[in-house]
Image 1 (tube, rainbow, N blue to C red):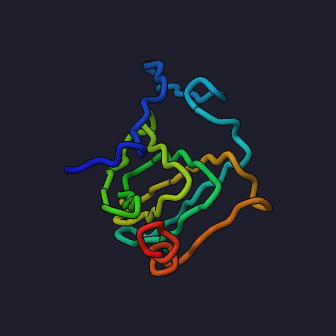
Image 2: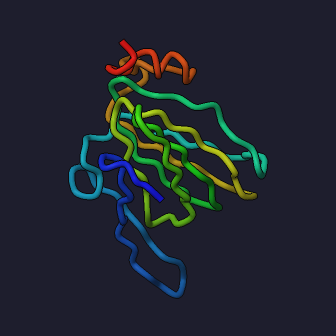
Length: 138
């Protein structure tokens, strides 16, 4: 499967313990940006998909805290799909990439971290508009 060179899977520290594993994130260590927004999605129906989007200014990290789901990314040239199913692994998605969450398992929880607060975010919510903004489209 082809991977985008600037979308990457990032390992998160995990401390194993018989009572339950502990994982953590720290600004500028595991997270390559200062976290300005944290959001999560839960109570997602199994097998469903969320509408796609692309941020023109925000970099995101996406983590599956529970369950599994696919993240479809598009860099303007090609699409790639990543399966997230471990809370100690996340997907780093740079600004200007399309992303869509789909094929959720039961009890999935999606956590996203962003370097841009809501009031500064510039989001494209339909793929044809995203394509039209690409340098090759003009």
